Length: 339
Image (cartoon, rainbow, N blue to C red):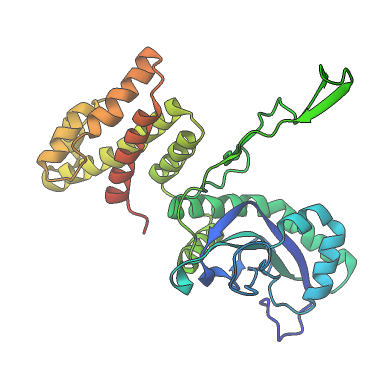
């Protein structure tokens, strides 16, 4: 049994929320993807474009589904604040060609086949979704982050707007010297906005992310650590950035060196020559001698700073964290590519 418009299988619909909006290209709009949840036949449907314009005047629309007007009415009644403020997303920048436009997705529709169109069967399906959807989405999010370098962490969201501090309020009261009466004033500091990180998600990347989330195949540890280092850098956590960046490099290069030596001399010889406790400073020259392309400042930018953090409690500067992240990105991207 598959979820389809033309068959007579009863279908239940619910809104699927993206906790952090996803930057996307136009070719992602309208895509429908079969998703694998235990005991369910389900499909995730993305919103569709209304007209090619930027901003609130042209928000994305709900996926074109049977009964979508009734669905939207129910969702708006059940979640009015979220629905009205977030909608389905919109374009936020244009481009020289139609394919260059960039939008953000805030939600889609989850379609689930049910044995019978009864309240009990729909609640049973909802319970099955509840048991597995969080893990499925976490895997999907991991893949989108490593493929696009977007920051989609909803537990510790990236602060993109800097205005009043959390402890401040706009209103101030005082007794005016001029009038000798009580007065008030509103303080509105300059708002500083930072662009979202990463590249917009495209249809091909979405399909990869969905396929691997369905299979519950996680991204390589090196890419997850690199993702964590990027997130730490954007939050000013420079120590964590350097530590994660260094670890991503080590777990990329150490097995690579072992494989290369094993191919020539055998695994037992490689084990003797390259013990696990051997320092990375001894491994890097060997890798270079074997012809591996590495950033010339890799050891200085990553491991010297890492050692200062570990052994001296050093707090790297923002520039040092970015240099470590840049070098680590070059290594992991070149020598641990995402297939």
